[in-house]
Image (cartoon, rainbow over all chains, first blue to last red; front, side):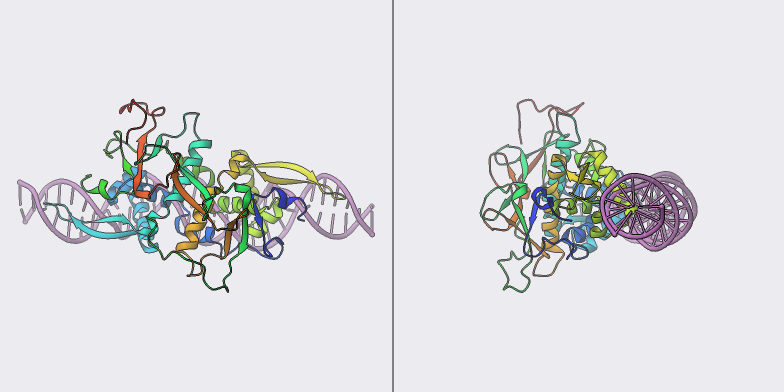
Length: 181
Length: 181
DNA sequence: GTCCTGACTATGTCAAACCAGAGCCAGGCG
DNA sequence: CGCCTGGCTCTGGTTTGACATAGTCAGGAC
């Protein structure tokens, strides 16, 4: 069943994973877990609006173009999942309101959303690209999403190796949440 | 309605976008377009399997854990959208079959899927991280997804500037001399 | 007080996503 | 020739996502 498949797969499965009859990514896969949280259209669009700076309930609903019922539901879920936090605030002379602000967890999803956006720019729009251009505020160059390794090499997509996590091995250097910004 | 919002937004809206009452990302947004293609759980999981090297109909259904009806539907959609190609092949001594292989368009979605996976590893699993480790085949270091600019700088998430694309905005704000920000 | 606005909640409906199980067709094998 | 396997399609049903409309509730403005 797996004759020429390995050659042309994007990633290379190693360390016992190569026998695809022997395992399934089902259940514990991080992609599935992520999709359980932000796997709906409206959830990702809520995050998009949050990145653009939207904080208030009505604005989310209006700017995304979803009903208030859906906005309420989605915001509640995202707060519960930890991507957003809800807290009261008050503008001078106004009553207290609730606003929804990004947490570190929510901010760190941005690369995934950006990657999706860049892909859409490239393949799903006309030759002019997408409607928005993202630039590095420091230098003005366009922003891109790159796959690379921690040694700093750019990693071509066909040079990715996948191995089972060394769960039994003493913990590799792990960034303790929240400093990536 | 936009008082203190700009300060704490992740990205900075520029070039006329700052007035959020005046525009909406609705409709032309590349994120929305991308979601129209891979916005379902099963679509992204099909892509995941394709990255792992899966090519055959039954294997997609079995390894993802979706019904064959859904697999058939999703594969047809992804072929139609251009992420996969279907072509016949035959193993020696076997009858001809169809296989589904990634196109460039499909391969280029990998960074988005990887970013999602890394995020899931980080925030949705225990301290040991996700079940799979991705490494650069060349050097063995773990793979990560980075946001950076074309000049090569790493771009902290709060240093992203967003401007209307000079080509794609029909009315309103002109940004004449290249990139402002 | 009454009004008005922002932030929701409630109700009822429709479509899409998914599942389980049965059926169907092509073609190599015995 | 009939069997079996791979690769689907069909039927029928549930769950989830979304919409539109209407209602509630708190609290500053008047």
